[in-house]
Image 1 (tube, protein in one colour):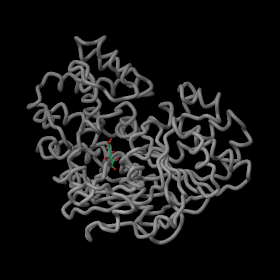
Image 2 (cartoon, helix red, strand yellow):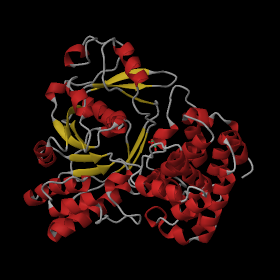
Image 3 (tube, protein in one colour):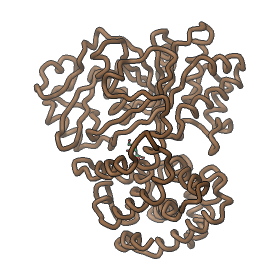
Image 4 (cartoon, rainbow, N blue to C red):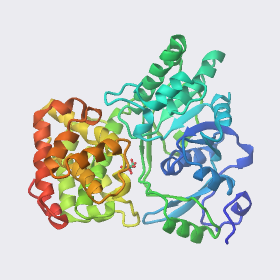
Length: 487
Ligand code: CS2
């Protein structure tokens, strides 16, 4: 067994490995991050690590809502881990920002203490779309079991919203509003949605507290971006080879990274502005462009690419017809839906994104992106469909990923493979009921208001999706890609 990555082994790492630019022991916690998965550790934690070289106590306590694996693995290596950047000029950087990882089931008291600590000035989140417990119209879902639980037991929260309100209650009682809550998930208007969910939750407990939160606490909107495939064995081996010591949970990502944050804070923040974070008054254009251009085409590649027999983003985008389809979808239906005049050049932004998909060093599994379709597609595709209807623009190509998602559900059911989605039970039940007819299945899925909201009664939308479902269902893997040429 090789020596693990620890404080002790840090000094002896090869010279080309980047290390924290500060003395870890001298810095204390300033951030509690809920959901310290690969994306957070490859993105916000890296910015924070680099910002600490400019000063400040901004170590991060991670709060895992479920799994204890990360806590165990990082604890054995003094909460250090390595970031492996896979691009034309690869490099490895050891990140020291974490001070510990806590797990909700095991460390409730320590988590509440960290959240209410006077030195914690930022609560940030990467909990994915489903973690916000919102209805399809963006309200707090008070029928969600976690929210029901937390409203009855507000001191024993199991939801992120419940945890945040616990932390803010302490600030409300002390009257010190020096805390900012930052959503870093791929949701349109993420800060506003979180603020509303927190407000609606707090209002049910104590309206005066809810009003205080609204008046005093900032929830900036953000756009986060960096392609971060899940950690696998190959990465663990590569990290060990580069480091000369073993890292039980390294992370990987492309060199490109972007973080745009609304410049509204109710307390101090790390020197993020010195390490590449963009602060702006208006994040909406950035957010819309990223969600629709990147995440929208990512999900399209995930479902259409899987039907066409591809395994990774690189494989899918290397297929000429898939590539051409993505370009057509971007120029004729996605880009015209975004109002970014004076903020960014959408055409070159989209070109750069397609180029990022062509990074041969990154093995980003389509199956990873295909997770949670019922939660992702509303932000990535359906909002674009809605805007196109409003503007009188076409929606036909946008209906292809929706059709492909429905066929993907049918395929998972037929192949008896797991469907990772909070609505998996409902979706697989529908697939079982309509096993003989994808048209019937599509009709049933398109009636789910929790996904499609008012589009469930839009006949034109439904007919267009149905047409694509029938067309794509009639094909086998090889000619799915070819058929896209005819759409
Ligand atoms: C991806 C995103 O897994 C997914 O659904 O579309 O995680 C994507 O890689 C990031 O948003 C890129 O910033």
